[in-house]
Amino acid sequence: MKRFAVAVLTTLLLTSTFANLAGAQSGDIKVIINGVTQQYTQPPVVSQNTTLVPLRGVFESLGAKVEWDSKAKKVTASKNDDTLTLNIGSKLAYKNSNPVQLDAATQIQKGQVLVPLRFVSQSLGAKVNWDQTSRTVTISNQVNGSTTDINSLSSKPLDAPVTKVTYDTYYNDSLTYEDAVKLAIADSTSVKTGEVSIDQAGKIMKETGKNIDFVPAEAGDEAQDKAFKGYAQTNLNYEAAKKNLEMTKEGIEYNVKDLYNKLLQKQNAVKLAALNIEDAERKLKVAQIKRDNQMSSDYEVTQATNQLTQNQAALDKAKKDLDSAYVSLNQVIGYKPEQRYELKDKPVYSEFKDNVETKVSQVLTSSTAIWLSEQKVDLAELSLKLYNFNTPGNTPYEAEQLNVEKAQYATEGTKRQLEEAVRTIYNNIKALESQYSQIQAGLVSARSAADMAKKQFDVGLATELQVYEANLKVTTAEQQAEDIVTSIDTLKMAYGKPWVLQGAASGAQ
Image: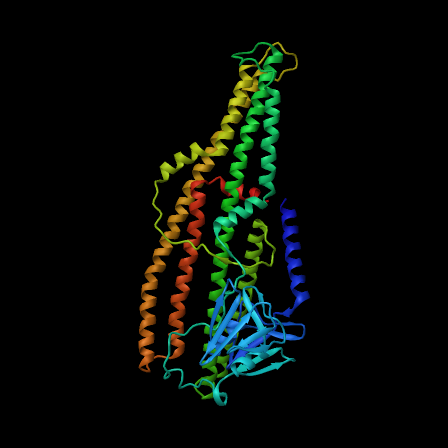
């Protein structure tokens, strides 16, 4: 089954890859705006000999305000006295109500609206250059090609620096956890098989029960005893089929919760990786300015360049991990591998308060796995009670006694495993809560330091880089806290029904 799942996942990934390549060439186009290399969740592409760039990332970097109407699938951008409107899938845009013919229709890829590169100069009057050899787009709207100098790093008015990276904003769809569970259950072959198994077991039980006239108290007529034992087994099969279907659905609920929350964490990882790239770019620019002014050596520039390269590699990996997380959830809920959507449910922190001993008792009472084990004990005891010593070739009575003992040991083992799982999950939640408290305490200091850096910048005692790094520490801690809350949310579901940790894998098939 694992090999089959891997093969299916590989096929889906390859299919998605080839589909994307068939429509557009992307991934190696660099965009530089006013001297700053940009990073986008969806890179520019070349489609039908037209270069398409992410609208929001480019326009906002050039000072425009961008708004998205998800119902109308319309983008509105404004700067100074100019207003631009575009509809997805259309080759016609409007500037101040005047039509502008586009080289290619606008489109959405990975949550980003892409527009023809030439439209940037048509709409905002920016200077645009496309270098085919290096596959680089250079865009500038600065007067006389001005660039940041070393004095500007400590003197110009500044709002808190923010990243140039554009995140997934334009989604064709959104997805709640509840809807994801419904989709996964509807798409699950295990659920369909379970429903058929219930129907099958019910028909068999009904048939085998036709000739049962009484419940034997001890061994008697061999044929009647055998018929009753058969009926008891089919009755157990029927009840077990219903229990197993319930457990399968619970496993799916947990599996979706796990994948949904992991996707949230991968989105955070992309955001942090992008922020770290901008930090590295700022440090590299400072190092270059200092070197050009003979305030440092080439070594510092080399170190900053290497750090930027490492951060770019980290962002590439984070993007691939995010794509894989989408594919994993899509596979479970029946979506196409390339489908992207906004996650609507984000866990909120609340202190976990529960009596673990009480929970252990509840789990041992409500567990389907324990119920099945106890039923097997009852069946083994029934076989022992109806044992007929006069039947030739029967299993030795002592062996039947050992079957009872084996069933009892299996039940005890299942109870111990679930009890251990409850305690382990509880301890893991508490450990994460402790980490969360530490991060919150650190956030207080980080926010205070960021406020101080901004005040010092305003009076010329700190650089733009120092302000950005102070804000980056705040953002990093906030994202770490969100990831911990997400992990706690997943564990809370497993805490109430620890058997889902085993049922999730099979229930998702």
